[in-house]
Image (cartoon, rainbow over all chains, first blue to last red; front, side, top):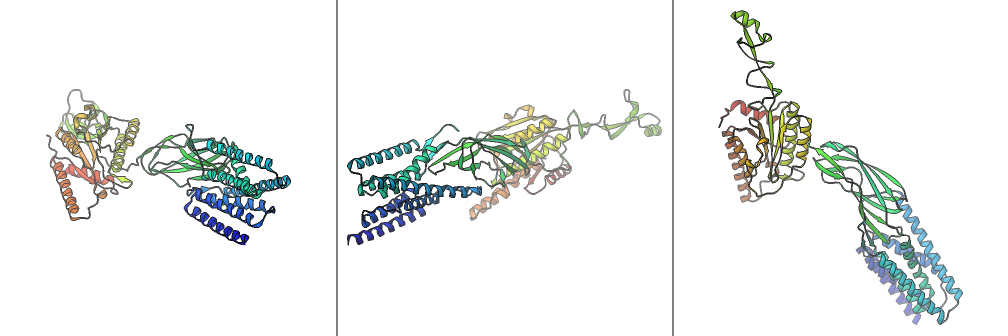
Length: 155
Length: 423
């Protein structure tokens, strides 16, 4: 019964994710797209809770597809002006996108392999995981902070 | 240069954080696997992003050109760092147009030199600064946007296109220097004027042998000498009527350039007075250099709003030589110009007024009151023309599309039939 309720919840979260993505694309709003993507990831999490503890071997594929959706969504809302562009620009970008998605699948596969090899972990490993997560987030926050809007006096 | 984070740079770390926290909370490594690529993407993207280093070399094939003619702009864009997506917009002032598409989106490798050939058409006279470009670049992962400007300014002078004039206005009196105009008085020259008895000092070659044979005493030919003229172009820059891209000032500048070109070609001395909010003047001299001085001065002509009362006293006396022909180019919208021109006539200057008609640039109005005001305004302008004509000043109304030659002929016709009253 709980399983059925969770599946309906996952469906609802999925519908919310689709709506937020649609609104984000229509309004060209990055934050709304972000919430849509977070809801999409949340739907995945709810499905795990519904399906039990078995490791999902298709996660790398989902990760690649998730990154693809995110990249295409942000590409759609990029500010653009009517301009003449080189014919190879779109091809290059698509190639870079494909490489990014394959790279994302690879990183996800690495994470899955490492977690499968650690076999359950224990408190120490969880503590290391928490520290690693906080450290990674802190590093990214520092990099984002350094890359915040700057006005450079040099040409 | 500015550097701005895109919304992707804010959303991806948040997604990574949420995924990692969710993975820890639920104990599911799959969520960490979904989140990790976003963190890796941000880390790699920021680590590899570099400020674009761009240089733009600009060359114009000429520094001066006539209205309506083309100019070629050669650009060489050099990238010191790789730029995955560069949007380049060349700034063109109003008055210059190009058929090349801008902005352009390019991909540049590190060290790449890209050459762009941009043909420009000079639509309107003026002095323009070209060569500066605005650019926007994105890093390879779309996390950062850089914007800046690049390029070196180059000055381009577009001279007003002149009209061909078949005949010029002749002043009432010539000057003392040699020129191409036949003077009224008599002296050494080519054009036959009269016969008179031989006096001591006359040269033998001037003896008219037929008259001498008929009369039995020596008679000599007299001729009209060729002398030059002094011409002052009086341009009114107090006010103009304008609609869209054209106005009365454009007509005045083009007419002044035409007159200057043709009078200087006839070895006359030409000066310029730009009478308006800002007073500019050039004393009358001759030669090609003077033509360039006049045209360069005309390029700076603009309407400068001013309430200060000005009359002829502000103009240096050397600028208005005695017996000079003053050709006034004015829409007669400002009382100060009207007063100055009447003052010129009162001081005995040989004056001709070419009225740059503001009527094509002014609407009649929609309401009854506006139409009534328009008709009154037209009547006032007619009265002003009558006043000038009664003082012996030829005044002709010139509209765009009518050849300047026709205006010159109207002035010549007025002078033929009017008696000039010396005041």
